[in-house]
Length: 190
Image 1: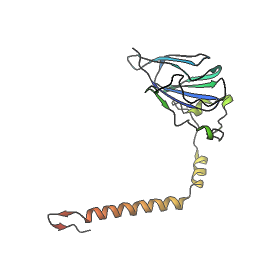
Image 2: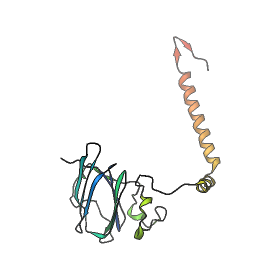
Image 3: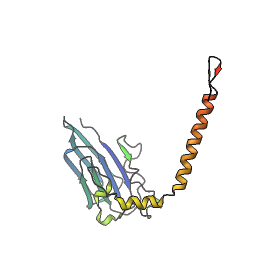
Image 4: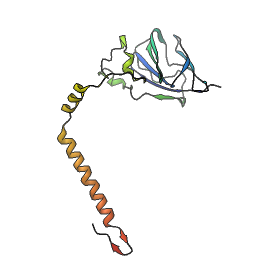
């Protein structure tokens, strides 16, 4: 009997992000059909434990414009919707979502906010899979210039004030809790 790996999903009006968390997946098989049938199978671990997902997506998809990337920690499938519209759910079937399917909050954007720029160079016509946080060392480099820009953007005086307030608040709580304690009738000296 196969197990279900965790499937995380997020959407835009024209795209669907599907991420399958399965480290060291072997013998990966992915199948996407135009009517929305999505199939995944693979083995993982020293015992080659089989994993499988067989679901029907909410609506039709464009198989030719969809792309997959198999990484060392997960499998990412960028599915192009046939029609650019927001889906009310991931699966065609109504009712409770299976426990292995979760929202991908790292990629999630609300329908009314999707026109805002979500991340660096989010151009969906030519997707850069290294920026999809797929594990295995992808992603953009954060260099000294970026760190300097970040530090210039931060207002150090506000941060220092917050730290001072937290310290004072923590000291007052400690003093009041110790001051109220008694040890065999004697008060503790502060």
